Image (cartoon, rainbow, N blue to C red; front, side, top):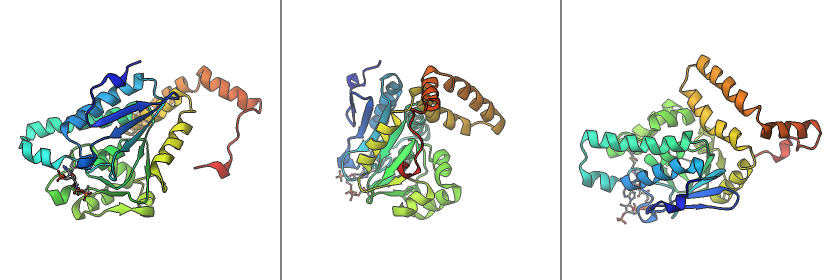
Length: 268
Ligand code: 1HE
């Protein structure tokens, strides 16, 4: 087990309770949790270490009223980066967000306020997004004379489709409220996104770790494959996951009538 508390974190906070529910906090509220280069490196470090940390689920939350204001525009302007330098920065963003999406540990984002630009790129890489009444989503890159560089071109169309993404980037259109859920930017809209994220994390942590690992890595990998290859990979993953002792125990208890049945009234 890797001890994440030994990492030297400045812009993130990390915590894990006795049940393996980890919390990663964006801790740069004075700058609306804008993502500077250091924060991206800290995300790489934390999410690289998480799979071997014993965590069973992660809540990604933020300090202050906004989840994340995207790329640190002040740092970016000040650094006067060359194309090659900024390309390398973008590759580190991809590294961080790929660690989240493909890491095999369920990550649930508790969203609030601005989830814009790179903030939406970060939110798009988690497995479940929970928003509250203050949450709004935007891609203001067009207005800033910029382009997305943290994976939005891959992940945002998966959530809402290419046409909506282009509209957001060209016109600065924001999504909030019910509409944001309907188009697929969030799966839940509640009064307290953090409380709901922890409820979901505790529920998800009841699943077998291998099943969660498959959900939180295999599905994303399969989106990158041809249909034929994805079907083959799915059979391979199911061959491994569905024949484990942990699964057998659950099947036995269902056969014996001791397992909980699915009850429609309790879903969601
Ligand atoms: C920042 C940033 C930032 C705030 N980089 N410093 N992202 C954007 O275009 C969003 C830019 N931010 C905003 O539109 C607003 O700040 C918010 C709507 C998010 C919040 O407004 P508000 O009134 O609560 O805060 P504020 O007064 O605007 O900002 C407070 C401080 O945070 C202030 O610093 P201060 O030192 O003057 O107090 C701001 O400068 C700072 N701050 N947002 C740096 N983004 C891989 S490519 C990705 C491309 C993108 O992400 S483009 C989208 C960029």
